[in-house]
Amino acid sequence: MLDDLNELRTFQRILVCGSLSAAARDLGVGLAVVSKRLMALERRAGQRLINRTTRTLSATNEGLALMVHVDRILEELEAAESRMTMGGEEPFGMLRVSSPISFGRIHLVPLVAELVERHPKLDIELRLDDRLIDLTYERIDVAVRIGDLPDSNQHAIRVGEVRRVICASPGYLQTHGRPRHPEELAGAPVVATSSIGQLRNWPFLDKGQPISVRPEPRLVVTANQAAITAACLGLGFTRVLSYQVAGKVAAGELEIVLADFELAPLPIHIVYQGGRKAPARIRSFVDFMVRALREHPALG
Image (cartoon, rainbow, N blue to C red; front, top):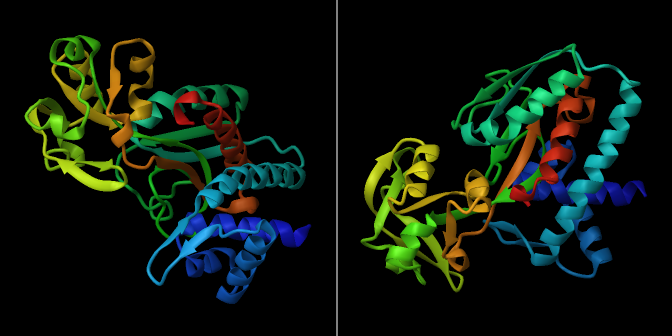
């Protein structure tokens, strides 16, 4: 049983860290041990779980399916171990949390308010910033990361994924028509966000092949929320992350188009310091956030 868990944990760290050598450093074992565990897991699974070349590493479809279950198994196991080692300790002290601005405003603030109410001795400093900050240098205990993770010594738990979507208001689509291919966006009115480089190209996948369209912005803003508001008012198409418009789509204020040409979804991770030895304030926050975010329909 212990060997099985080590193989699953190693498989998870390989995909999170991005390479066998980085996973070996993260786990504190030799590269040969990591390779042996992966081969043993693939042998028991009866199929390849990770495609490996000299330069790249990626999960197979079977590996991606397994990863969903592995994340849940290891998270529940570590939560149980943490509860035993903490002995029911009440979380207390200052907890510093980092998150992208929109994600924090939409998803974290309501959950943080609930957690602070539940644990009166716990104080939280929530830093909303779209920069990729260094957790150790800026003394951050827990962070939300959207996108592939770089090699890191921090522990990470995957909680969901988001899509990069194109959307417009129903009124605009009724008047101007619904595009059937990304090339139809060329010359169409667009609301672009300058802060994330949307003034250059919008990338897509057409039958697995990358293509790009250069938008011609009718309006340029510096925040996604402003772009979403403008799109709701009928100014044209905008490109944002799916969680940012989930409420507008559900309310019928926006419609997503060109879904068949979207890039691969971006993973969402909770990244934190200390692993299983983290203090009660970190483990309680992580356990609570993992459960809540995995249940959210906009992040599935």
